[in-house]
Image 1 (tube, rainbow, N blue to C red):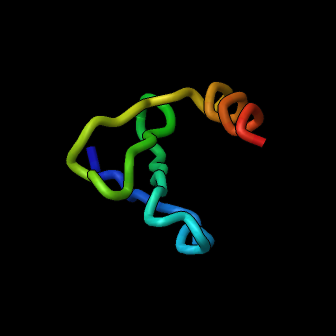
Image 2 (cartoon, rainbow, N blue to C red; image 1 turned 90 degrees about the vertical axis):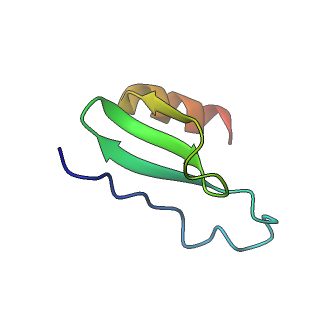
Image 3 (cartoon, one colour; image 1 turned 60 degrees about the vertical axis):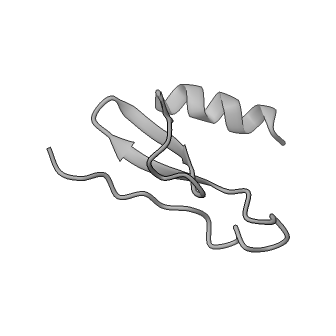
Length: 58
């Protein structure tokens, strides 16, 4: 399997004090990790679960 490509929002530097998450398309769903700790823990969510999570953050 190829190495995941982690991405963060281009707006992540706007007033966030470095508190950003990164997302990656994974075989099992969508990976979510802390951009300040790329070797730390990760969540793997289904696309539907990620949509629900983002919807709750609005």
